[in-house]
Image 1 (cartoon, rainbow, N blue to C red):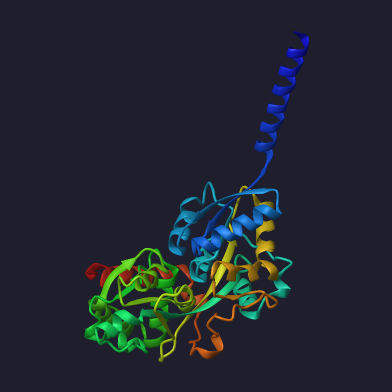
Image 2: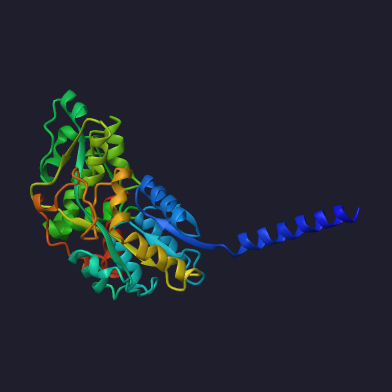
Length: 342
């Protein structure tokens, strides 16, 4: 009888200790604004190498910024990884993210460090990629349409209903496209262009990469996206051609930020330093991610579009990442483009 009592007591004590261990386990709440395959690969690898449980939610850049802002008084997010730099810069300007100088900074390429310096180290560059589009070769050929090589070609009446692009309110990719056109053409001219292009747009998606995935499946002819997202579809075997616009184009600096007053700051810093390491950034090609990594020693996938071969504009990240400019452009887009969207 006494033996049974002791055995029961031992089991109970073990259960309590196990419960305490679970309760005391380190945690990290992560927003990931890249493709979900990349997010899951990073989380799985990080958890295998650290005694930290990661709770990850995948949101586009605009949605991530909105979530971080909504939680400002009581943050539930610790760190935000990936997505275009503009909303990260806006979050920094709004005091939503904290300054952190990683010991990995010295290993990063100049554009990644410049991103950090411009935001008082409240964000940092983790990858880069140029804006363009992917088109379905079979869809366009079947309709006798010449693939567009320039922004101006997207106004071709033959492309009616054949273009998809994301909504810039939810998508950092689409906001980069909007800011790129404004810098290329001037603001009034850019909005005139967008209103004309609207005649050819079948859908404004929530996610930035969704348009080229639709093009890959033959649901639309063209998706305006970052070129590496189009390359990903081509590598998968879909009949997708990749275009860098002839007039010039903008580019993203995918970024990372720790949330101000995060509950798990040390765990966030652990992720931050880890994900800037060259071996970790070299992993991304396994998820068919073809951006340019920010660590100078990371392996660049051979399929990644070379920025040296693309006509890049001198994209003004500071101006177009500011709260004032971003808000003004999005409000104008809603009034003049979103209001007439098909």
